[in-house]
Length: 259
Image (cartoon, rainbow, N blue to C red; front, side):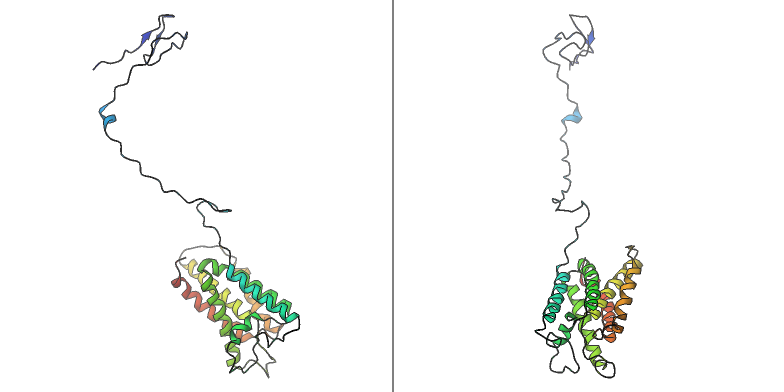
């Protein structure tokens, strides 16, 4: 098999140039019409293995960072807050009374649906509504984004209804306690807070450091527990019971979802 020359001599300037060029780099004179073909080695004749295709990521959505899942909008939490605000607006119109809107006045043997409606009623107390619904918005969003809308609604409804039911069952509505009615979302808000807190502590024990601000959580819990001192409808038994139910659900939620 013939081998190409190591160099060729330019006939114009006499310089030795590479046999693989067609023009002299020193004077520009054409040395040959085309460069010699390179001989292929035995390795080159072997079929090349196909490169494994790298998995492709789907197109990024708006405001999405590659490798980080985007936050979903907590639509169920927003709906709960909107429903409570609508009830407050209806009450402010003075067309319906607080009992007409779903507040609980013991006994309610023939109206058990009030256990579900009472957490949406906040009466004339704007401070009660602000604190309770702010807590629902914060901790409801956290629970919803972690466990989904249905489980967040489960915690809200179960904590709120259980709190109202406990207040009625333990006789903390009416004389001598001074609670003519029990209403508002303090029990539901404390349930959401407790569910989130229990799951957060479980994650920390498992080695997942989330670096959450627990001081703010304790402040919210303290304000919600002390609300009955300022608002008669914010029943203390309902708040404590809602927190206990939420804490129990916080232990169960991770087993109901793969998030």
